[in-house]
Amino acid sequence: MIQIEDKNGENVEVTNLNQAIKQADYFKNFSHTDKLFEKFDKKRQAYWQDMYEKLIKISDLKVKETKQ
Figure 1 (cartoon, rainbow, N blue to C red):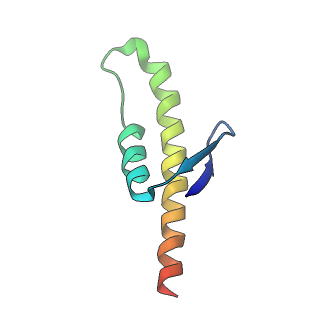
Figure 2: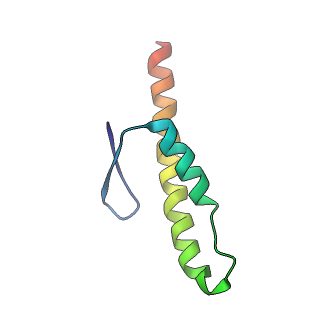
């Protein structure tokens, strides 16, 4: 298990890194077709983009560790 601090300062537990990366990748690009949700979508996309970048960094570190 990995704990990551999200954009809001909350700790998020990650039990499956690969699955978490896929989920963050999906949601960082998700948006509603209804423009009434545009402001909400931008906040959510920024949240998931931040989470995605953190997960990728952790994944890269894990790959480097296994190569050593």
